[in-house]
Image (cartoon, rainbow, N blue to C red; front, side, top):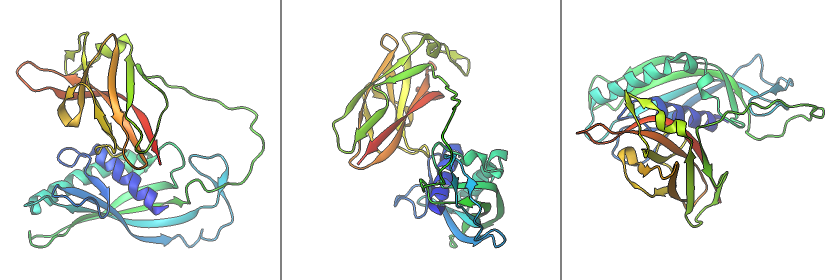
Length: 298
């Protein structure tokens, strides 16, 4: 329950923080490397006394069946781990960036933490309580303290049975391209899978900073995890591009890449971006056109 909240908060922070902290938010203790990072971890979880033990089930995100939930008030720390040689200025810069991101309206009301499926938690509010940073480089103290109120339950726990479903309403949203084969479901350690991303003509007319792609156009394709960190699998095809991407030339409106799954279960995102090309400058990642889920099962 709490681990799912920590993980989702770290993922959202990782996608919203600017460089050098983009993709560098993790659930504590985080990776053992020399790069700067923000570490998310629950410090305390207090049961809301007036509701604890209630037999009233609730309808939670991800399932229409009612669930038994635990009502908690949590204190969560976001601690800054500076890079090698980084001192108080780097720690304070990281706190500044995280504080501004967390003050966004959709993070204060926690709506930004919603995700497909059964998340295991639903928050009514999330707020920064305090910012603490040491005055000396020798004292490794730099953290934000967050208070969060909400419901928590084991994901995928069985709910109460309801009546038969008589009617459902589905909303379908389309992208200007498709991927084949679809869905992308692979086994851990399986051979690499060739993927074809078919674009329609609207994808080659996207403006980014006043620059328009002309057919044939190049696009940047990356494999990322839920927090915009490098994905577990590996991507080949095309040429090496910015941000660990592969730059692919659209061939007849189709981008062709190859994905090699990792040796263990994972969920990656195949992210397609506009590739900005300015004369005299190296190519840059432009606007994201969309993404596809890649599920690797054990």
